[in-house]
Length: 374
Ligand code: FNR
Image (tube, rainbow, N blue to C red; front, side):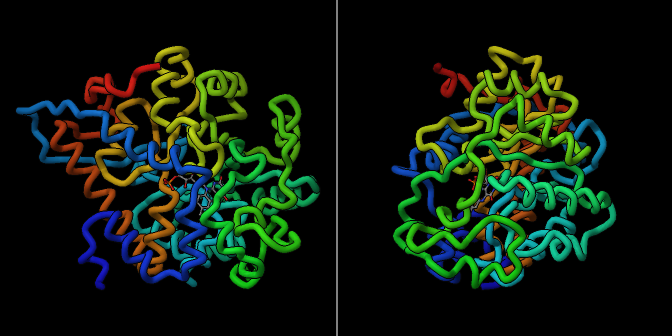
């Protein structure tokens, strides 16, 4: 179907589900164990109510914002979260997502396990287009150090390193494992940038990609090691408690932002959705929000979800599967449609709330009583 006929992210996912190879779909769709965290990620937004103000001039609406301490301007507070193996879903791959992000002024975080090289991905980047590189530190540190050197050498494109911490080992993703996807990783990736797909037999794509990933990272050792190998700001991804957000803020200014995330429910099942962690931070250590930027991802399907996260104090909101399903539904064009819908919905929501600019959003715009029960 023509992409314009698809009206929301669920419809795009439906088309992607029909068009994508089953194994790719299973890898993208899957989450751990009983998929509690994945379901909750989206459901939690439905329990937060908006508090629209009326009699406010809403002729104008500006969704743009700045990230990483005001340094980088983006046209939408929506970014593409790092997700492995985009070419499994469509040959446009990560480069197709990058071109779509370029059109909408959206930031993109490239996965450590991307199916294209960083050079290929940024080849058609617009001036000022912002990318981050996500790192899974490898047991063989020399491999990660070489990758960091390569990213350091592309300062026009890569503005930060995103260190993912919520998956030192992969979650148990049964849908993915069932596919027993032995060789597809190699076939689809063409040029592997890192990771070790040569794990002998069995497991799903997830299990294979994680082979060689380090499980021994710590605050004390890993952050100084990173500082030796890059001067780019660090964004820590996968924080799920206010205690860890508090610790992260102590490592500013090396750490510039955190992404509250449970990995789309693909790591520890029954881990909390980002909204819960954000509410914890507001309650126990709100000063964190002034020291570092807090971004969130997981379960974002609607502009109202985006606006609710921003109103709670998030500076940016990430999409993982929606970008991949956009790609699966229509390649670059499908990702463009995904961003177009989310941006338009975000604008409509802001206007109906009586808000002109992202910076005006605050806790007064929402009623989150139903989800505050810890
Ligand atoms: C991911 N995610 C992820 N995260 C990361 O730091 N590195 C990675 O390589 C991947 N790979 C990956 C593959 C696939 C198929 C998915 C669905 C997810 C997690 C991702 O960055 C993000 O946290 C979640 O996808 C957000 O949830 P939603 O938007 O998918 O609900």
